[in-house]
Length: 87
Image (cartoon, rainbow, N blue to C red):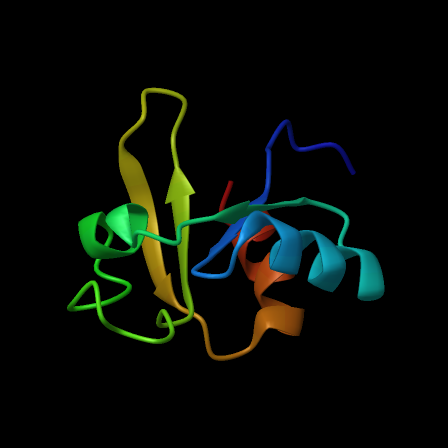
């Protein structure tokens, strides 16, 4: 099903580390690097630039750039179906 959406992942790892991870697990979406934690801080995925890891959060962002849904990611495997059903 083509829902006209783009999926992006973001982590605090380097571009090289993300590429190796995405290649190893055959990610079907782009994995972006936020080593300075700017996105993580802006979206509440971390509390400090010194945090080692981001919280697992999912945001559904509308075509106008506003956040339509914020989800504390507990079940990544089952989450896609839930998000698609809400579109």
